[in-house]
Length: 234
Image 1 (cartoon, rainbow, N blue to C red):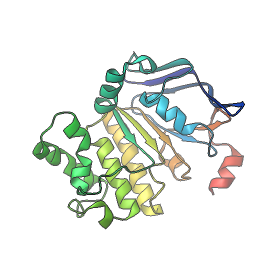
Image 2 (tube, rainbow, N blue to C red; image 1 turned 90 degrees about the vertical axis):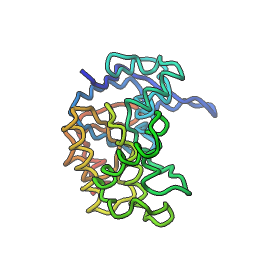
Image 3 (tube, one colour; image 1 turned 135 degrees about the vertical axis):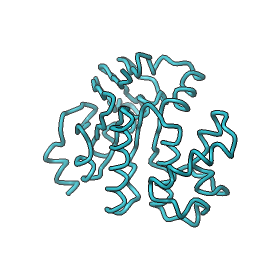
Image 4 (cartoon, rainbow, N blue to C red; image 1 turned 60 degrees about the vertical axis):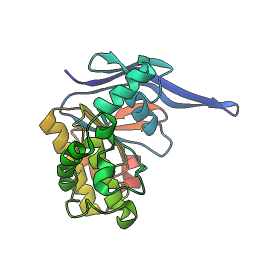
């Protein structure tokens, strides 16, 4: 079973005479077909948790396991392959290439994995259509709105049909209508392809699309969305 399992994961940052307990003994199981929404105040460690799941940093202690593999113990080469082949990561920043069309920006992972440009374009275009950019595939990033650029980044994350979806504020630059559309796409991808998905968000709508909701506060994970945080989202 291709599940993401975090077991008593700890990640602390030390500096300026203090220790920030970003993730402090977190255990979480995201099963195949599940979309889990993770809420929390700014600076609560949500993005750190995603980085640990993606193998972009190693935990101080505890285990991060995907598909029976220890993510935190991967070599640099193994980690790069894991992120290229297995992970679809939607970053909060778009990281689009200024001189490339929306279509070519969406092909980057496929090109990096050895596909020809023609093959990559053929595979990427349906994903751009799915996120509502079918009429904008030839546009450059500076011709796209912030929301459209975010949707290119989402298509790029999904184009290799990943086995694990990780998303950091994927609706942060979208209006309400587009946010709901993208949340529905992410939910449907997890359900249709039976892959685990972990979504970090402040979007109050996300909880309506997620299968489960958790709150990360002061490095600790709590089930559900607590009333104090709910009030700040409404």
